[in-house]
Image 1 (tube, rainbow, N blue to C red):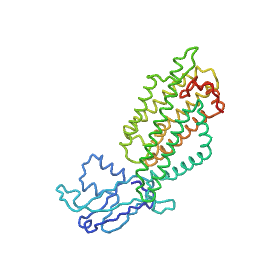
Image 2 (tube, rainbow, N blue to C red):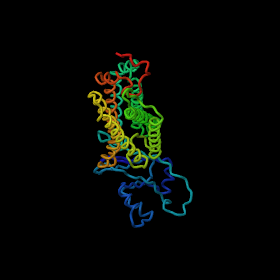
Image 3 (cartoon, rainbow, N blue to C red):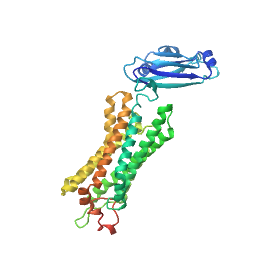
Image 4 (cartoon, one colour):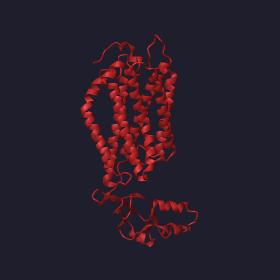
Length: 394
């Protein structure tokens, strides 16, 4: 439980009070650090001794009762344990269970204990609302012109189509997260289906963007390696390039799914506690370095200033997309544990939005678009068939 610095409340409702009184039922609250000290202590504490060291204790003897947690300098994790007179007995006899409902509330903006969000989740509801609002306003302004550009089926048609689908998935994830947090703010339970849907949309978007960026970069790199004097540079769709892209995409997909099983909480960007999260961060760092190295080779030999600027901008977008999560996960280590998830989640989403904006500006800008796309398959993969190379799109 993450409690606020003042007036956090633990609310308990008991269905069978008589059984609770007969079993001397109670709740013991430990600050996370104190409980971990007991667990890791060299001294062997008995069961009774451990629970006697609780910072707070609530006896369950009323139908409804509250316990106020106050005078805490900063939010921190609390462990809540149910204990009765049979808990520490070795020869435990079966008896009727105590049925109770427990609600944890933090202070809201006005200081009243009505907020279901923990300190680690506070602010995410408002962030996703603003993010959905930004997506909506952007769609109202640019959706029509973008759709018209895609319908023209110019040389950038494939890239823009894949990029737009990834963006729609990101927007869908934001909407699902907002609906989940809106429900959670009312009942403290939320909408698990919407949380799972948000994670699914984000995973598919991540996979799609990985394949897009990787296939583009590999197409340019391998195409330049095989370039002949009389043959234009084209996207190499050989089994080698396709195989590498597929292997990397499948690897990331497996790690993303593994990460979800390691941490069942509904959030897309996990702090790097598990093995899957660590491997995923390592994969993203390797991808960023590999793509940067490949694009650097292209940039150093490119004579056209305009095309060199195109590749440099594309490299910046790739590096931002892949390195934002590893960098933010590293930076978050210096903050308190309850702040890390918010820093990683908000930071990664904003950085990837910026990366997408850079890519859209790159592929839609008039100066770079016409200089590069006028060569059709000379520099860019995912182009239209050769029969359309001489068509101009305005």
